[in-house]
Length: 271
Image (cartoon, rainbow, N blue to C red; front, side, top):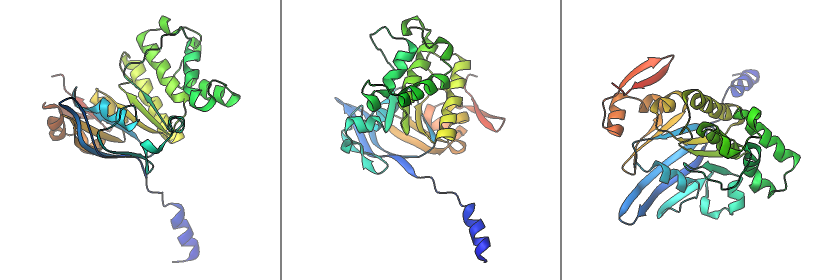
């Protein structure tokens, strides 16, 4: 093989996707209730991973442990090979951000003021031009520019949810965790948010983990899916491998028909 041919061959070789966030044998119990039991997963960098499963499966508890909001009883969580416990809080907040299911700020704030809170780990409330750039980008990403000066308590549930997501995006972390961010959203805004999350992966290389109840959103927009049931992983893999009748029957105890629309697997579960 000539040197020139070898050089051309090397140019088309793409780097292997690396593991970004890793969970190793984690457990979490509350009293006698085992919420998460012996869970191990690896989330690849630069991907969108959806966590699906019935209510009470342990999804929210798992991602809370993955962001250090909740301390696991046993096991380990690693980010790029480093244990979460070894990070100082300020440094971890620059690396990973999370939006919980319930967010309540008891202050009268405008959308712009709320989004600026996302810059706290970087600026400690001394906002710079760089901070305002990230704030403006997050507001635009979530299509909030026209209402950025409205107060949070004056917004609809969907607008408020988009404002909180913008706050998380302004934090500008490599890893973003969203716990049921599509709650209170109509179809138009739910689709818009999922498209935005895909853009963050494609354009900015973000690693996004999302808990979602609608399996069709998971099917159409995810790279990987983690399916949980009774505190354990039922299956984990590419969408095409998880969105099957046999796999969904194991997860939801339902026989769900699957149709293919524009190369996407659509689950017909309402008949």
